[in-house]
Length: 441
Image (cartoon, rainbow, N blue to C red; front, side, top):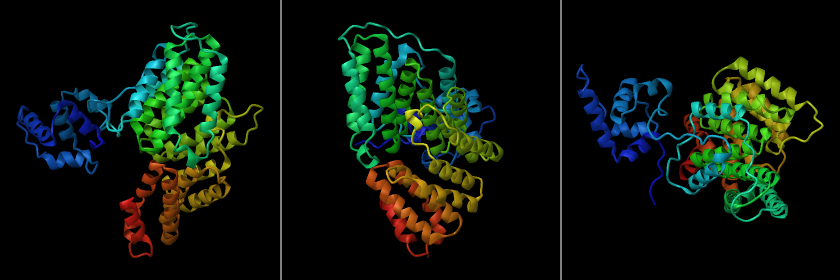
């Protein structure tokens, strides 16, 4: 089986059929053609380091590379490395004409295990998509299409089946991904080929949005971020067509969470800000403020982070006569406490962070295993920062056990990312065994 393409530079080369040596030669050629007759030290090893993320090319090297790829130098000013490289993807636009297109595009991405596992939408693309979602009003659904009539009974059955699959315990949901994919394909077929009334059409779009959102989380948990982004784009398009602003806000929040997870917090702020304008339920607003606080903390914006944390806490304590939207119904004081602790960790306030994380862990229900695995990793990181290494080893092992059992590859990756922080403590009991386990896992 072909290796996965894990970096935009490797993908840009693949589009042109260039090897690493070919790219180095073209960079040399670009340097020689400069009026000042520059020389470049780029070789195959340097290109390999750029693609493995071990080194970032200098501005001079990027300018020469842009010339080799025939990319306007203005793109280097508009986008950071490596987002200016050719082959970057764009989300499908919103509107009823694009809902099925977005679903089909997402299905192709979900089935493609090889291409562009590095790919997510850029900060600029996400900002544009969220602004478009906020400004556009959905077109009226077409009341009749070629194909079979879609009735309430069929949609009732599909909604009920999808709800049961989604409600399965975390450990069992890893085995239902193919069933969810099949459900999504069926809904896409009905939208494309069926005849239905406007109310039925809205229900189909809502079902498509819900299924695409859930399937996106499956891919996200597997570490397949390109496919997750495509599925969430399809979910946003269909939520928009169904006129469900709350669900759309939740999907923008998923995009933002992915950006924070991938250490791109700048891409998270604008979607979360747009979502906050367009959702009113206090639980939803609490989650959105909390995620924006995480982004601000990662960016080192302490004052903005604390404002959002205060707003998240106030919103969560606000009563509402209406139930919370499904996408945030799980939001609890445990989530607020642990994510607040993670914010404090990012801001260097380790002791306060530990208190908050421990508080949240004690409140988390046993049914939320995936969340528990992530929280355990946060706890291990805080223990390491406090130099409580033996306890950190115990907690990291617990997190790894849990993530492996439930099939959440991104959670396994999160634990593996602790390995460099454990290296200075190799003489402590259990550290070498844990590091061997992280390497072999």
